[in-house]
Amino acid sequence: MVVLATPGRTARLGRTAGPRPAVVRGAVLLLPGGPEASARRPSPLRAAALLGTLGRRLALAGRADGLAVHVVHYRCRGWNGDRADPARDAAWAVEEAVRRYGDVPVCLAGHGMGGRAALRAGGHEAVRSVVAVAPWLPEEGTAADPEPVKQLTGRYVLIVHGTRDLRTDPELSFSFAARAKKANRNVCRFEVHTDGHGLREYRAEVTALTANFVRATLFGHEFARPVRDALAAPPPIGLRMPLASGFGRPPRRR
Image (cartoon, rainbow, N blue to C red; front, side, top):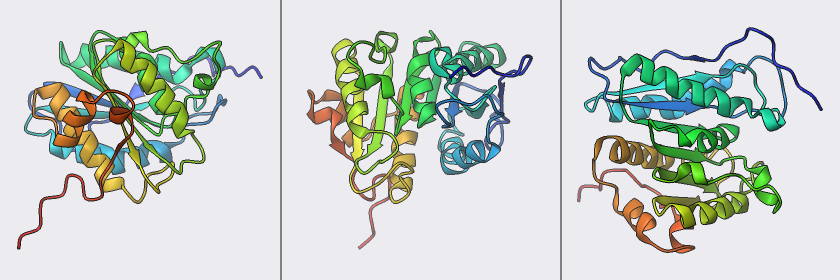
């Protein structure tokens, strides 16, 4: 199936989540999910959902660090085969962030198809880290042409996947992480047991995990203990790390 994007349509960065920092010292670019093939304009609902569930939490957590958070608005909805349109838009978005903010570290964070785009575009020299939540990685299931991993060398990579995801196969993201770990020790993967593609039951834990990972990789804050353990552990332990219920919540006072 041949899918052609509308000529002249361009990608763009949405407005910053929350107040823009007076001095931007780092940026997170959020990449929404989408279908396998479509030339239609992207759904504003997907962008709004990602901004609401993750973007505002990241902006709040990183405000004192000078973190700017943007949603990337693609040229079209679909991945569209070898064209990999969202990955190309993600690479453009990194260039645009550098143009706006100068030489600042960038994190690409995506969900579903956006997770695949983040991993593909992670080789840009400005990218310090990549977060892929429930990434869609269909090529990982083909031995002849698996997803590339060499572009992630030197980056910090976090993958989070629900074990009951019926839309994107969690075993494919494990296979990807295992190959990426051979080329790059700074890869970790968390499994969210009993949760599905949207990770609704563990939404607070996933956003807290992502916020910790972003602040640690972009600004030098300490990794949470589970992240340190996952990065240090050999496969498969560090690639099947369970995300505990209540991660990121302050301890209860007795």
